[in-house]
Image (cartoon, rainbow, N blue to C red; front, side, top):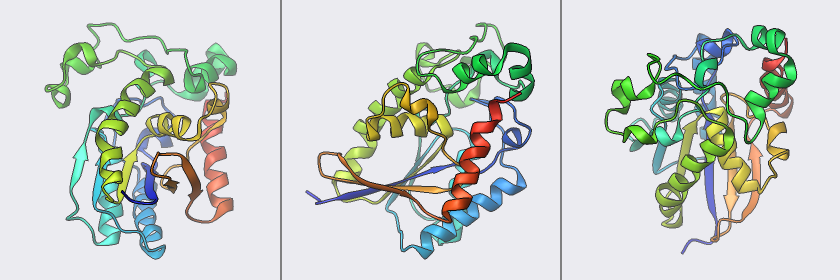
Length: 250
């Protein structure tokens, strides 16, 4: 068994709906031009810091897939095996998807929007079953048991799908000595971070994961966290975190 294990988490670069400050969730929007630059820069930073990988994981959503592709291109590692899973998708924002966060905060109040965005157990308004955004009607989920697919999720729900996937699929690769890169989303990564860092339900509300910045975890063999750090300029990382936190303000 390996003595220590490293895992790199990477939130996708800015998407076109991030840029427009819209609730995105499972809406399959692409990266903005800035997001593409962030993704490539993430790959360059990983390369400059001596990182290499054996296997990569990402979601079914193109903003995460394209971020991973651009990062691997920058590392000259496009040949690496990539496993995609819907269980790494962003938290499903239900009927909020497509709404402007600032306008929604002005209408319902910043506290309500903060609950929808950051609380552990409060779900957003759910989609109606007949809504065209229902994932059971979308081709990318045709291989998934319909009853597994949500119409809206809180962070607790997101953890309920991401952590078993991590334990069953990703952690065994790490324990075999594989170097793993996971490229996903703000809330699916917050779900992992909450469990890794053993944060309370209240503490995770204050965690904002910046776009396009590699987050490196080092684990003991029992998956106890030994160390964690963001790669890149600390001031720039903090500014990106603040930008994420400010999205829900009127």
